[in-house]
Length: 320
Image (cartoon, rainbow, N blue to C red; front, side, top):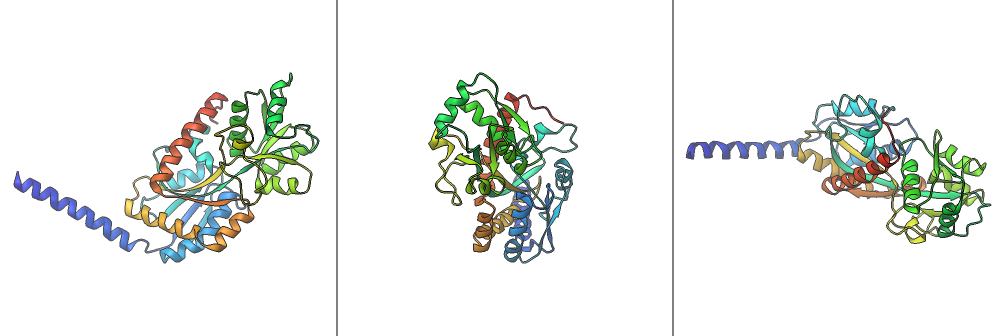
């Protein structure tokens, strides 16, 4: 028995030593971040902003590779060797991709380890400038009173814009039908042209139109007011207490990546998000640094899966 206990103790010490050596030696070569969107989107620009400062912290280069198509990039990352040298950046849709895509050869729920949350981007609830409602409460009352079924535009099925619209209509107790457009700009323009009654638009697609007087913003979707438009109230303070739903970007590693390696990568993210140039350039996009470490991000991800999953189920969304 004593011999068995001694062997077990030696095995545990060897494992701990191996983990420590992995932490000390990592990384020894370039790290790649797979972005599951085309160049120019929020996940892509955020990842590229952070690659330089992360590389400085880690002492090795960090390169970004675009693999658009959702599951295509996800599969590349999921089947990569779990050693910390292949990561994936994805938007908030990651939380429900298992509900949006069928016949996957990997698991979004179990195939990845959360590394860190990178940023959040509040959405703007915009209406035409001719809208009679003076504020969000008046607008909700008007929606409830309508005998027809108004339309609202969303930036694609499964986008943050889509889920924010679903959440808003549900919380408001209104009856409205979403119309999917190919992107945020088209969704905002649909409100401008009168095709739809409202839209939860991204800052890049909607804020300029609001500032130019072509659209009117009733609220932002985040928990707190945004620094780029501090005069616009939140949905929560303007009429629906507790409402919060934003676009966010997360960084992931393949399941099985050693804990010390994940910790080092997460620390590199925290370092990058403290870089003044990164903070300023995120602000230029209407986004804000929003670091969450491994454990806290994991809890946040669980909550998002619950919220977005319930909204998807209530809307009858089917995997494609």
